[in-house]
Amino acid sequence: MLKQNKDLMEKNLIFSVLIIKFPPSSPISSTTYQPEPITFTPLSTLQPFPPLFPTPLPPYKPPIITMLPFPTDRLQKRVFLCQMYLLNQANEAYANHNSFEYHQTSQRIQNAIDNQLKPTPLRPYLENVHVWYLYNSGPHLAVEFSLIMLIPSHANIGLTSVKNVFLSILPGIEDQLNGTYIDRNSISIQYLHI
Image (cartoon, rainbow, N blue to C red):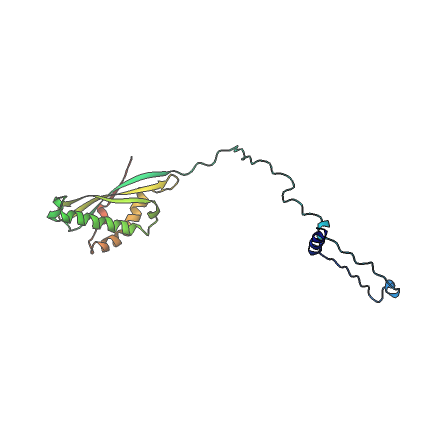
């Protein structure tokens, strides 16, 4: 057993050697210097590492809020009722609201308005475009539709801005409706208070 402990100690020893060499001009170099005998230091005599957390951390306490946070900006639903006239587009089929032509034309007009509003500043706020009615008004086709928007309370978006944007996209709507001309003087936009 003594032999096993000795073998084990020999395997676990780390040796350190310190050599000091003085320059030739040094006064000590002229005398004969006898180095100290080499001693081997076992690993177990080294100091241990300090603990990772020398002092325990206090328990977490959330900060006390002394001021209320800023109120968040609420979205307000605004509905704009719109009317426009497509010149010389009246059709007897539009008298029947259940006809295929009525639904097809309503969908085409709705898609044209929605597609043209996509690149405008209103697009982030636009929730829905809905065509409500088509009806013949002499030789013209009257279209009643709504723009439903979710607008932050601080945003200054009203009738004038919606009408200006809508007037700016009319050429694109006309192109998507196969060159149909829309009477600019008959465009009506009203704000529905809900």
